[in-house]
Length: 172
Image 1 (spheres, helix red, strand yellow):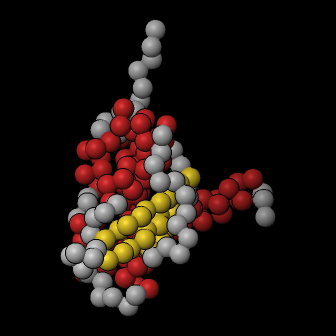
Image 2: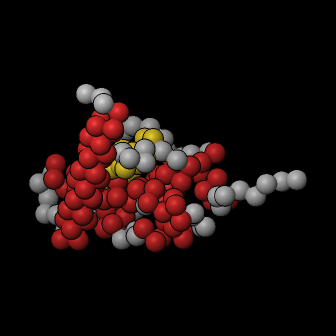
Image 3: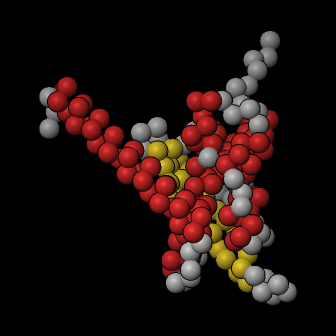
């Protein structure tokens, strides 16, 4: 008897055969996001080049390092395959819902890790703009602020939990 998978075929495809895993040396942008409490942490690297015909900046390469669950790994792989060759503006238009739709049937308890790659991409593009002293689009600045605030909130809750455990178990 075959046991049905908790995950969709698309999730399992990217989990079993991930694309673009690794580090880009001399990257143009790096996004670091994560949920230290649940263990999903993602580093997302992008390389930017100018399209000779259109003169627009495109994402020529994307790689990632993900420490996390099946869904976190799958969405990282999927997103790198989607954004290569896209302009920065096109990449920024990709929404979390777009990734969820492509992954299909993400378990509710895995929704938070199914969208980490989008946040990491936003942070990598933000990093690229900052490094190159480019004007940061308002929407990207808002995303960056939200991601940073979420990280601060998670770290605060995490620190409180560590302090609680220390008291509970008499550890220093």
